[in-house]
Length: 540
Image (cartoon, rainbow, N blue to C red; front, side, top):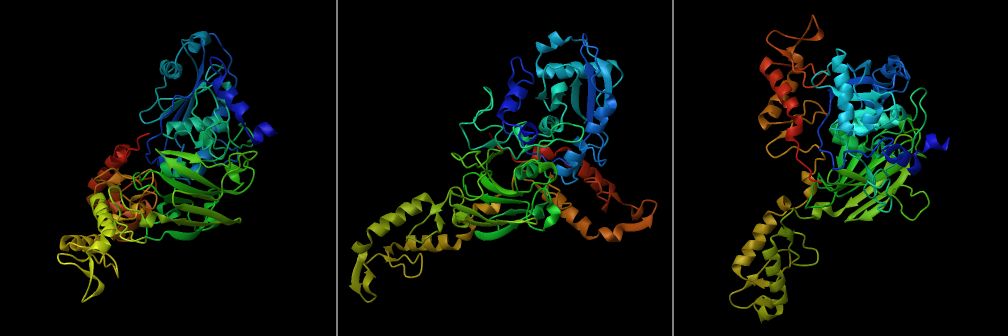
């Protein structure tokens, strides 16, 4: 069925914007702030009835299987989040409780805000003996159709939204993800949405306007997340992300592994292509998507290119062509991206960028000649241009030939053969600028993606997916502890990685069994709790 394969505009308008709202407008409009999410993330799934609607449309077991049961082939949300995070985030520990009866009627709920509707369910659960534990996220399930969506990190789902596609989108808001966009500014999904919003059909953060397929029990599956959103949550290992130019090489042919089958090759799952010296959070991303797994509904295997700005990924589509297919090759902003082939294991993409020659913010090319890319102050470049314009007036035929400098001037020597005559101070300036050339160019060296740490903090790097920001001293300690891990293990009560006396598992993330002092384990827990506050803000 077309409606299952591709949930297009009509479906979104129905799902989000019908009158007083079948589901209502989403309340998350500004770009999300990146924060790595890792480990067990418990959800309280609360089943609530309106005071005047007694029906219990589904048994609690249905919701347990949909939300909390992983690995049994049912294709529910626990499997979706485990897959999208590469196993780094699970819904383990989540619970389903209810049905509880709310104090509000359906009519009263229609007059409430979404947040108030959710709170009514939370309050009903509390009266029934269940309080949402600290640190748990909340899904409120209601038994009659009024509204569905996210508010304040909590989720509301009525009977029209009991499917993986809708629920995963709203729950992803609970992890801080914002909506995805396309470059088609003529596309507006609803009166309240922004141009291009919800138009990345390969990404679940475009809500129901995505390619989809039917699950066995839980309705439309939607699709997976794009590479930027996975990177934003810390779900891609550092060694599976390549930033063009970070190593000073501005031209490469890259074999990109598919997001749906990362084990297919050892290549990157995400390629960042920086180009904007004024904004290290403004760059292109390149990813490879295969018609597999949670992306089984996409039309075909394809390379996707996004422009990321202000923490929001915008899919580049071929506008003016029927169906607006995704762009697979792109030229712009000093960047050329060309897809040359796709296969089961990887896509081959050639990328060239002038980013390695671009100056850092605050510097400009000197341009003493057409090939001079040494970065200097704006005042120095203005002086260089003035000296170039006056060059012939400062030459005389003398002991060094026709370009001998007149009295009081010397050759600038900004490059080999540079015989423009300048003052001695300006020649000294040219030499000093040459000596600083490498330090003033290539902004790609400072592009680390959405989880870039704020000033004064660095990634802990306890493993390749550890993006928690810590002090430099803590990272040094972590590296030291990792290097001696095997010397602190013994075969004991907790298996071969039991810690020797005086040490405990660090537990910076689930499965972290590096043995450290108790103080270092406490430090890891404290750093984890501060992760969101230490990420560099991206203003939208």
